[in-house]
Length: 189
Image (cartoon, rainbow, N blue to C red; front, side, top):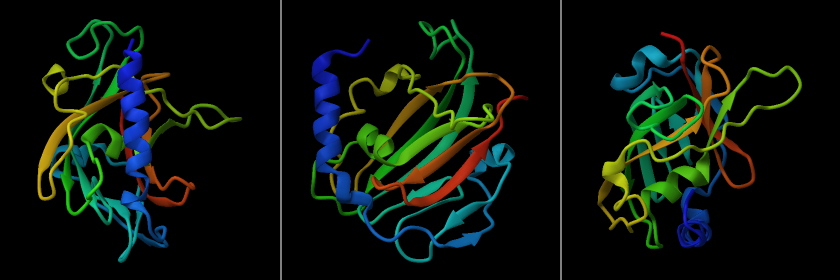
């Protein structure tokens, strides 16, 4: 369980960086190929925008920062990266680059502000996945550190899976729900 101070810090950081990805929503639909490390995972095409924020090819591009997914994998309970979990998780490794944010930008907040993970395995409701524990201890100290303009910080995040068959769709949205794009990742081998 996360200490209250960490959650409070994250909430404050979220408020400070709300405008970092502001702008018009994606309106054009283009086909995408995924980042090299996730190429076999892509199952569907995504929206992208020629101007304004976009998420395509495993890269989120905003006015003030970019997030590049470098890898992902499913981790079973008890395995390294999910030692204390009761459910399998899908973990994403990514780089966050500050391209001009003057506010307090950090890798965790940048991700949480825009991404939502969904497993479409319920015919009645949207099954948004819960964030799990940090899957890679090497980011314990750096995940909430401020990123200097021009700097890049790697990080990781995990989502608890509800089943091990249904693919996970990662969607980037602004705070009002306008989509920047989405990418689907396979779960089953």
